[in-house]
Image (cartoon, rainbow, N blue to C red; front, top):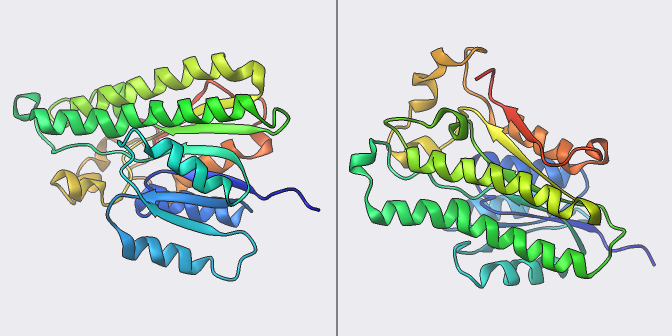
Length: 250
């Protein structure tokens, strides 16, 4: 009997960077379980595109901030095969604006989605992986942001702070889990042309700020997916605790 298929969990996988990550990992031979918060039509499109493949793509509508979400997601993913990867991609910026306009509701939501949910999912992965199949190569990839270094003054400093925390989490967790063969890295996108800017209140932001990017343009979500795919591959087997900047030179 052949070994169960390798499975990767991707949070926030129905749009933008997340969708490209799901599609790329599936093309690379992984089964993928991805979450979405409120985009069932996009999720069905992705599932439909994988119809006929011998390794499935499955969507789950889930609130990643629910304390029960990590256990549920891993249980569902394990039905597809061996879970070998976790990509913490789900994230929100909150509304664009100075900190004086930041509401407590927005602050709590940004921290809950970007940081608390990520920590919980990493904890679930560590608990399960340390308890079973120690010879399987496993990888956690956390999606950060160039905002962790720039601070995003006047736009979304709270979001930037959560992404800096995600990078610190990635470095510390990589050292904690390295002896068990579990690799942890982060990908730090620069300004990427996705709908996240529209949801923050400025659809054209990616092109407004393009002049400050050394390469002179916003990034494409596929370019972030390429970095994630490499970190999930055997080619990056000696890489852990790293922050991979995919930022056009920022």
